[in-house]
Image (cartoon, rainbow, N blue to C red; front, side):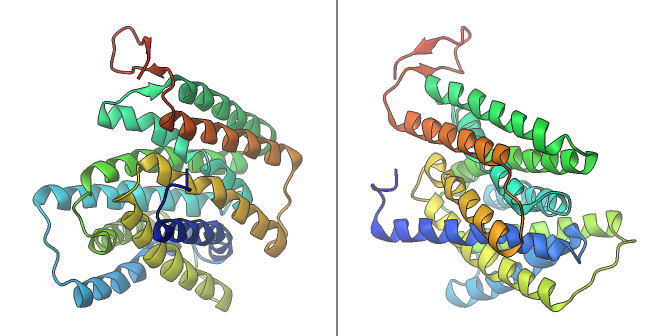
Amino acid sequence: MLSRLPRKHYAAYGLICLIWGSTWGAIRLVVRDVPPLLAAAVRFFFAAVLLVLIATIRIGRPSLSSRQWLSLAVLGITMMALPYGLLFWAEYRITSSLTAILFSSCPLFVALFTPLLSQTRVPRRAVFAMLIALGGISALFYTELYASSDLLLGGGAVMLAVIVSGWSSVFAKRELADVNPVWGTAVQFCVSAVALGVGSLMLEHDRPADWNQTSILALAFLTIFGSVIAFSVYYWLLRSLHAYKLSTTNLVVPIVATAEGALLLQERVPLVMAGAAVVVLVSVVIVLRADDDRAPTLNLDAPSMGIEDE
């Protein structure tokens, strides 16, 4: 999959994996002392300020159509505010390793939403792999998350974030082909900061925030690296790569997150979690290989739902 990328794309892909693999632990550190929606709102607010300054100096004023403005507003909610609000909220209840492993199923939902938004066919092996992966996630829910309502709610929040992010990735690929990635990301950060700020005022007004050195440094990392750099590079790559390909960053991210969670945060990695991660990741690989292969496909547009060759 990656061997076909130009060298600069390969480097950008690796940078995204490294940064986003490290953000899960940073989020975990922030939400220990700061309400999750407030933390996410502050992260995106400062990221928006930085990107608007960079875009204004280097590019000038944005030239966007009304459709592009609307698409960016939608993505500000569905790509940024809702998923990251849910992820910050979830990491107040479950470990960063478990969050990353659950989120690694995102490419499966990208594969599911691609035919729904682009009217293309789904490879049959991809459908089967999705079912297997969902079985692995279900086993993880039953064994690891069923222990308490907090764990179950946290896992459910991550899976909702996965579904929304999967839809948003395909929608962004379709709608933002001609949008400058820096300005596009900056606008989304502005929208998400406002939405999360309102959510925090409504839901977290009675929760104090402890802005200590650890939370400030972790939030600075999330703002500069996890938001400004990683999302700008992500949207730059999305202009050249299929959403399937770019979503495979989620294959590498859990490995980085789990290793950092175990080494830096002393988070345990149970055998069942490792097993579920293997099932999910292998299933995602099958989905992505099926996208490349000229394999039998399941036509979701046909009334009979029949199997056809490409």
